[in-house]
Length: 304
Image 1 (cartoon, rainbow, N blue to C red):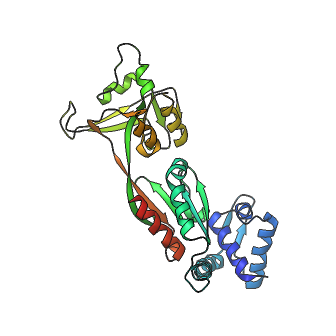
Image 2: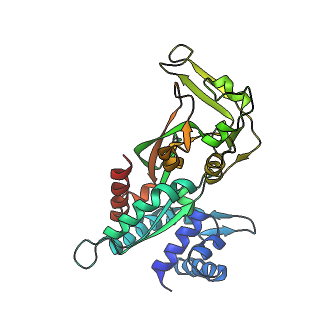
């Protein structure tokens, strides 16, 4: 038995909570993964996991072993990947997570330049608009947009995402007679608004009066909007605005080129919208990895 390989398998099974998920990850059969863990248990002379048809649970001995095994696996991976060819060249896989649109539109060019600088590094990019558990998925670095809940994760703020009210010029040109482009939050009740359901309070849009607004500076208004389309996909949200289907309340980086050429315009500029922080987040055990530190530094320099 390759004990180190079995330890790595055991650690990922515990983190993911699934033999089948680890089998997919390691391009192996579920039976092979199960046999590796069973062989490790036999070698140690201790039961590490209690397995049922629906769940996995660590035994008391398994819990103690997992803490030490995860630390050792991380340290060995770092030793193997950070120093090769006598030149400190980074190598090995880095698993990165981000939202679908941010991954496509912002992250990919930065990962390309990072890999050009470190040709022995490989990137496993996982894109998902919903919440994912970084430890369970074995993620090294995640880009998270929004306020972060308290957790044991290591987070570094690297920028801000500006969310604005945007519409295509064709949508505005096609407005029915008597309906004007919105100049105050209440005007949105007359408009087709595209709702992004992954955002907290998805159809409750919040605005703060600025210097040119009709209300006193600092006045906060929340409007519950409606429309004929809502989505949990940031790419669908972008497409709906870009094809004149309605008004969107979305990050400007989703429509950078359309804003630059005037196809899409900002509405209600006298009303400010919340600015959302961008963080790079890693599980604590990844923070000492040289390749993870290098990627975080690379992304920070570009996004800050």
